[in-house]
Image 1 (cartoon, rainbow, N blue to C red):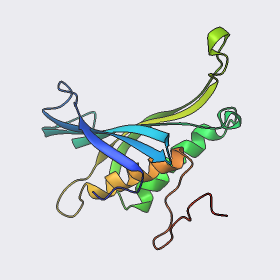
Image 2 (image 1 turned 90 degrees about the vertical axis):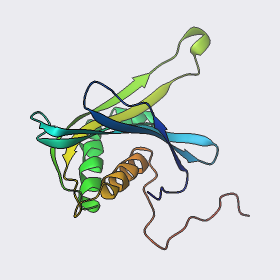
Image 3 (image 1 turned 30 degrees about the horizontal axis):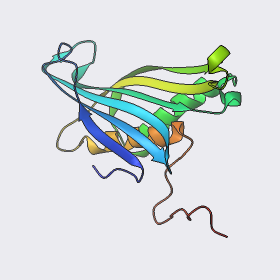
Length: 170
């Protein structure tokens, strides 16, 4: 997989009791010297199939990013964040079923010694059953997850052939 600039991934431990085969990665999307989003993606495989999944593969995803405090109070944020996922899957031609998940918008306020630690976050937890075979590779699902990370971070991918200009030019 060719990841977008600023996105770093690494293989992490995967769940051992959910499926006979699993692989997991974690990712961080950085902009400049700050973390914009973090996530995990797990691919589960049970050759015998799993009734709850409706197939032999399952992708489990988690993406979280800090957002403006005004965003977490917007009642439309959960639906919009969920559409980022469904649109990303559609944009990359992913064949997926049994889509499920949650969107959490939270705001925390620090007190005492933590007065300056106010934080607003949006988190998208999801899972889906991908069709994976010779005609339907895993790569589009990875690209959709990468797009979701960018959307949650407020950094959608630029169209092909478009690059950002460096900041701080005078």
